[in-house]
Image (cartoon, rainbow, N blue to C red):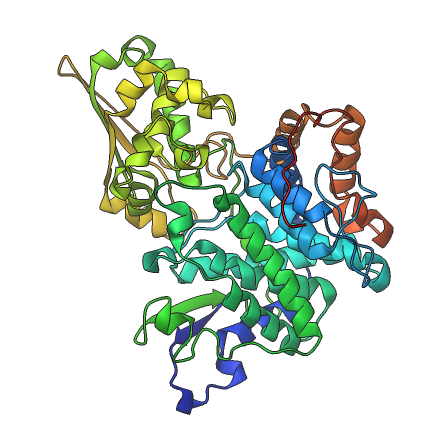
Length: 512
């Protein structure tokens, strides 16, 4: 890997193209290096993973809304259009709207892959816009599954490299500001665009996808699922404009009125961004990890630890009166984003939205401790959140930052990087229960790492309520042949709901 040093430049310094981060990112996208077999296999896993969590969410209101918006738009004339999760595969729409609808479906349950370092990310969010463009232009450009794999590998590489180096949340900027550039770059790789075109698309995508973190603060709304889909949609549109010769604000990161100077660390800030050398394989996807549980990633290990404690101490932990307090010693991010350090009273409110509860580690740990399991629907139900003994125990759970867990959270040594912590349960009789966990069971270094078998099972489990068995088998067979798919097969990278399975789901109306 090489390091690109990033800082603000005055306008009179006339920073060259080659010195700009956006140009370097575009260079990564245009590098024709081969994709390794292990990366190909992981790309397949994540395509399956995305479809799994999208299937589980097909009847949820934000997904229904986004799908209805997308299907209100006709296929654009420049290609064959793209498919929308849940709809008949023959029903196409324009690629930016397919990216929108499928992006919301993938993100709604907060249940797909993650990478955490200086910033947060769900790099699987790159897949919907890249696949949508591939489906739209497959016949006209002769695109294949191998091209899709290459585009996805680029998207993951660039987003993860940015996440390793540049903190957005520190400056209250939403993490999708790294997704716009990565998705644009991934589409550029897919289409084999030149470096200048991708450079302009990256700049436009970044400029249009910077927003504040209020979408993940306080009373978290349904926009949380829409934000990454919006970034993917903007990336598609940015590539379209750049292909037509339109340009972007330059230098977008380094300008004296640019992103670093006014949205991030300020005029004196410096960042060192790791990027692959020319000819070096794009392998960042292997540093990311998926979720076994539908909750914020920083809660994954805590759910597993709570399940373990439930089995070991059922008589004690079943009664809130026996517990004086529960303290989770954890990283800065966990404490301040999903813990009591966020100072969000909504994180302790039984009437809070699902989006808020999946960002409340006090709630999540309490329910997993009492139930010994976690379910993407039942664990968030209003009945579950209002249970009297749950509310009583929930109010006794707090978090504190532990510097060592913060250090491990930020470590770029994947063998020590950790997202858990230590729990101290003080009992009413004066006793204590103390335990800790570093990574989730499904993590590559966890107790039960996810492999192809687990991804396939996750898809089967989450889709069986809405897909016919034949559709499940069709999708799995096709997805596992991804690198060998021809242009006429890319349209099959979707899922069609079984007849009648979505009957009764109210479809909202709007402008379109």
